[in-house]
Length: 392
Image (cartoon, rainbow, N blue to C red):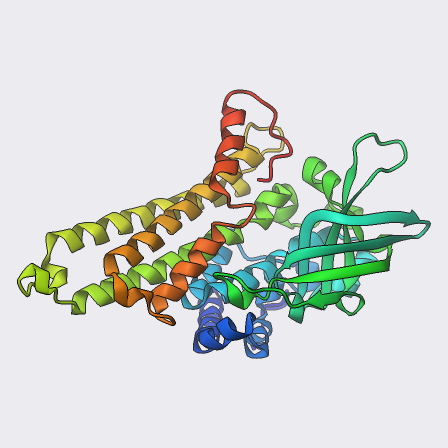
């Protein structure tokens, strides 16, 4: 087990080696995960053994608080082996951002565990004194099969506030019914099933006001003086940064598969010329590599914007959302081009290209990745309209 606690500073190479191990375990079970619509306990254990789910915890809770470029590379390493495993590693670790905002009593219960969430505020919640009563049906809850706690969102009107507030209510997994309805084109290993809650009582100390955090950057009072850089970053833009890195990892693997296939391929319609010697293949590969470099450069820019974020500055959710969507669109373009150029052999069920293309395409379907939506928000911002509540 890699020991990444406050007593021992993390070693980057050890961390990357641990990520590769998680990736290798998940790649060996890729087909099983496809069939079962979830990764296995082996993959979850590998994530736990590497302490990946704790990487973004505050130091006072044993987290090394790794920098975001290291975090991004870690997610890419795992995703290059299996995007579903990269997706879960990303979410389990990034969920500790909202865990860090919880009051101390709740942090002590939830920190260090495997935590899932669903931000769509579709539930119904009523105030019951020192508790909230929550009911609702939620889809797309990635990793819920292995989670100890799940953050579930709902809207509520509070006294004295005319604007509805979005609450994240942290619920024990044992209080939730899971419906295994995850049967999708790609990212099947994420096990993003449906959950149902019926009159679940949630103590108020396990509730976050997401609207307040999103607009006011308000950490819990007892942690405001701690050196935890994520408190000074926009909540959603930080939480969503794992998705483009999953796509980047998948696109990198597709480029490797394309090169490997092209180096071995001889085309009869090219007079027996080796494909790697043909200008067409060279041009295609060079073009796709440039597209990947552009996407990776945008990701670095995204991280720099987070690290240099000024609450009173001009950068906001629409900027982050547009960059994130552009990165993922580049990866989707790489995936589709690789498939079409490689031809029929790449479409066989279980071929790495077929698997990774489906997974990368599905990253692009996530609500935070939808290209037209994010560019619309960015365009509104460029013309001076308010985009404070854009999902960036």
